[in-house]
Image (tube, rainbow, N blue to C red):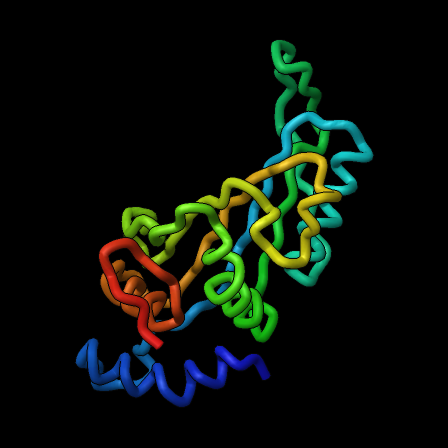
Length: 182
């Protein structure tokens, strides 16, 4: 089992019950999935293959290819062309990715001062963007010939932004204006 998952069950659940004043332990917010989306637009097949391989190396599972829904002649885009890839992580892989993200990848961002707390959608989900995939240790910056960003979304069981922020803060997500908890 993932280290962060054990820590969540043993330490964070009782702390969240106390902090949020919940009567039932089943009401404690938890992560349901993490969705990583990388849009790479119209690129050559070999570049596309390399980006998909890098996303697979980062997440530990094969990405699903996203195709264009409509043709746009001004962008030389045809319906059915691959323009992105996405991965949905659940279970132990999700907690392992979360652990690597907050402890290794985010501190490698230049001039990183924390994530903006304005990324919540009003339903307890949090989305933020990463400018380049080379912050992950699985990617060698010397072999990555194109830098592509990605969007990362944390989906939680709560519909309250305050509870979701408390959960993510306890899981180690460094928001601006808050001290990271251990």
